[in-house]
Length: 279
Image 1 (cartoon, rainbow, N blue to C red):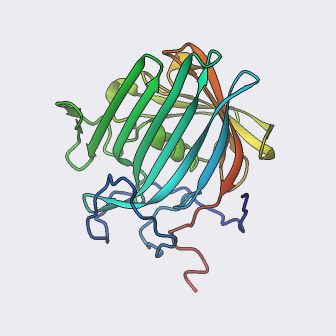
Image 2 (image 1 turned 90 degrees about the vertical axis):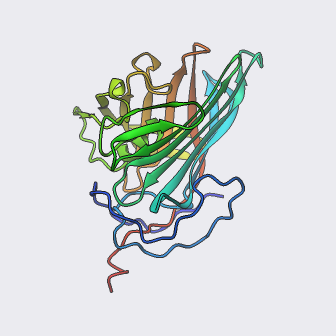
């Protein structure tokens, strides 16, 4: 069911990491019970999303419907004492007339105070190609660790981001047409600089309606979704919500471009202080 709430104007905030207020809880829990309301956190960065946001998509290859997907801010989890948005992306379908299955799953834990990633799980299943990678990020010590295999390295930034959390960071930017934003915040050095080219303002029509949008070309060198050769494009709603209305990317393993078209959405709950919260 589509549901719209009164818009809350947001500011851009990238703050220094600070200790969390909550008791440590398991960060990766299957079937974790969700809480429908959250207390306002005076240290939370002001962002255009919150827990409970759920965007539902039709997945297409060309003009053909080939599957479905969602992008959700599922809950507030704590990771090593730090409150994080648990962001979950899922795309499932089949292409090449059913010959190749797609079952891709991404989860990122984005710090609610500093807008940086503290954990990342990438589980890709594209036909014969299957890869699951789980990362822990330790920004205070400037290193990352893979927990599915014995691998680790230096973080490229004290405010690291993975390819999913980078999209949510993108939603906080002012996005001036004709400008290219460059950041050295991808967690691996060889993935930098990450670039967002703001191509134009447009109108994008999807199953969920017609939206005024800002069209961005993201490039994260070596990242599966947004590498230079993926010819990726993201259309964000040109309003305070910055919803992902449309996204396309080439699946490098299959050599096929797929696109996500917004169908329905649920609004998230802001956890940062608003004028109403301040009296």
